[in-house]
Amino acid sequence: MSIRVTTSLGGTASDVTVGKVAPVPDEQCFEAIKAGVDALPPGTKMFLNGGEFYGHNLATTNLEMIARFFEKYPDYVDKTFLSIKVRPANLRRSVELINEKLRGTKRLDLFECARVDPNVPLEESIRALVELKNEGKLDHIGMSECSADSLRRGNAVHPITAVEIEVSPWEYGEEAKKVIATAEELGIAVIAYSPLGRGFLTGQIKRPEDIPEGDYRRSLPRFQEDNFKLNFAIVDALTAIARSKNVTSAQLSIAWVASLGKHVIPLPGSSHAKRTRENCAGGDIELSTEDIAEINSLISAAEIRGDRWTPEPVPDEQCFEAIKAGVDALPPGTKMFLNGGEFYGHNLATTNLEMIARFFEKYPDYVDKTFLSIKGGLKPGTVPLPDGSPANLRRSVELINEKLRGTKRLDLFQSARVDPSVPLEESIKALVELKNEGKLDHIGMSECSADSLRRGNAVHPITAVEIEVSPWEYGEEAKKVIATAEELGIAVVTYSYNFKHNFAIVDALTAIARSKNVTSAQLSIAWVASLGKHVIPLPGSSHAKRTRENCAGGDIELSTEDIAEINSVISAAEIKGGLYHPYTFRQGSVW
Image 1 (cartoon, rainbow, N blue to C red):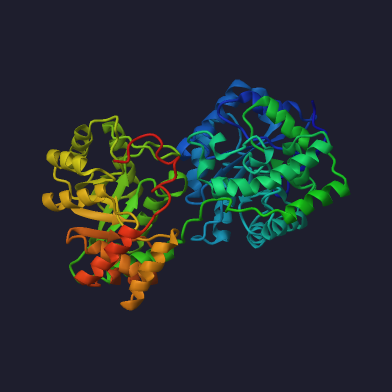
Image 2 (tube, helix red, strand yellow; image 1 turned 90 degrees about the vertical axis):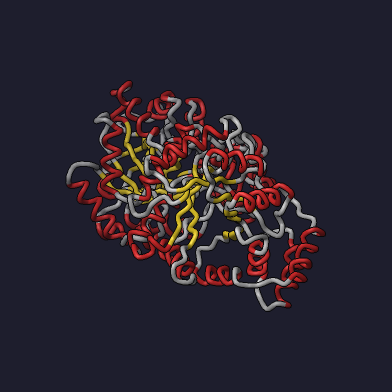
């Protein structure tokens, strides 16, 4: 099979001809890359897309695989146009890291920021890339996940070669249309990633359980069970059209994306040579005006439920103001319990730690006004499983301190969960060793039973234990943990005080709250605080106003009658649903 349809890139690479469809590399299969290259006509390069962070747990394994490919197949170096996406922070470090990992096997043809950094003027970022280009560290500059306005601004500083955005029959919004139009006007290629809706539009994934354990798609809103069923309607409709043309639904989706403009290059991902060839063939399918109209009609009529990604990170300043509001609400000499996690970022990344470091760099006066608690110790990866081995706990603590960049001591380290495969005593002893080395000040536990708490405390005094407690999550084990902690002099930090569903209990609590002229959130916080002087409610908020309201909840004094009334509501409530998604902790014990 060979590909007939080609196109050109834009900006400073307008003389480069690439295949109309660009397969994405995978660390398991060089044959998939070769299949894509071999299908192209002579003189055409394959657009080979990789990422600084495409490896497991956002590691550089993708880059290392690309280097190994070119080491093994040097004849393919000049047959590919290599594009690498990076995080927007620290561009020089990223470019130098990419070149280091490529080991001189291949030039960095195109460098793309994965997103526009809201904390840095776009023009400043592009100028930094121009400087690196002038130093010979990259050949062309691209952008990714940006608006049409940002694309125009970036191109005004330096010609942009390509812009990468998500486009598929289930993701084709107004901003994507504007980006495609603006790119055409400016002579910029559009790299349309996920044209198959992350595999959903192929029809091969029939139910959420078909997605492998550990696959990041299990966490995406559109792949959750309720949304999945509704969203499958567009798959059925596309499949019907595809059958009438004797092609697959995947090829039809790719052909439709390719039809959006000569400058639009579909970027389907595959790790199998056979699938790569099928995908590439989708770029050669010619759709008639009637075909396109039919597909556009079903896209317009389709009701796609769920965001394509988990929510975007909250801007720094919004988070900073929320932290400051909490600290400023406290009496002098009191520290705010500031809770973070090694894995609180998107896809279990370290963005939460990095945000905390930036906060203390900007507001050093708040360092001594906070008590920083970080949860860690999970197994690196996309599924949060406990790993209480000494080696992993050391890795976790050292990573936390690295990301904090010396801005703040690690006041409290909490193992996120008890690892059933490692003796608890062994895990606590490992943390004591790290404490003695000065890498943390205090030891905590999280999501553990009363018995585990007692065992951990017998090895070394436990400062705090974190469990979920709220009017809709107050089971017998939580009561035992609170009682045991009081006996042993351990603080209980209670997270997730509020709720979004199961509205019968919300209505009941709201009625009580109104009678006291407070919010239901404040009433929930006050009730949790009433469980003991050693119990600390830990409500989460990224808004300063909400933080102040939450803090005020801790000052509300509930009478014996108030508490009895709330307890009665809790006892009578029928709460549906598990504490977590069933896939989240399938392996390992919560308690």
